[in-house]
Amino acid sequence: MAERWHFILVLAAALGSGLVAGVFYAFSTFVMRALARLAPAQGIAAMKSINAVVINPWFLGVFIGTAALSLAAVASATYRWGAPGAAWLLAGGILYFAGSFVVTMRGNVPMNEALATAAVPTDPQAALKLWFDFSVPWTWWNTLRTAFSALSLLLVGAAIFASTGSRPARITPQPR
Image (cartoon, rainbow, N blue to C red; front, side, top):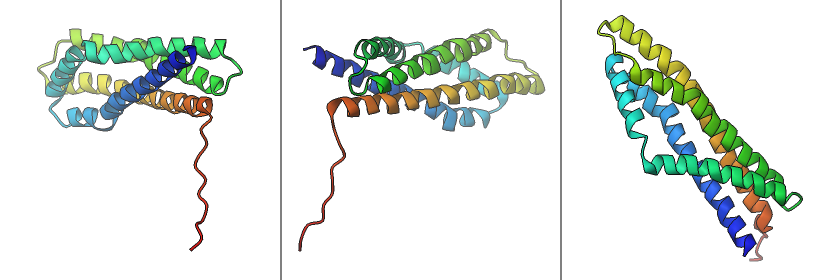
């Protein structure tokens, strides 16, 4: 029974890492670029709206839930050290927690909070400066957390692969 719960924990951590990586990937590859095509005041307003709407049970449940699952995965890997896939699981759990959750809380969230309280300048040049000063570092941090979330998915997936004893199928030629 413990093996089953361990497998469910690891699978849920992989799923959460993948979902979060996908959201962050979308922002770095096209959402921020689309906002940059708007007038700066409109881009700022749109980002403020996105930042308000993202605070919802669906996103936060996956984002924070995966952080909790990652810590549980780290504990499980430590407890099960020596078992197949434990090192992969430990690395994947640490990478998600530190590279996705901590980076978000220390990097992106403070920038979002500062933008939320900033008055949108009526002067187009001042609005452009505000948007540039926000969007460039925000996107950099977002791309970093995208990479860590995706790498976490890869490592946790490797842990699943290693722990199930799966091996790639061998393709043998069939006689004609």
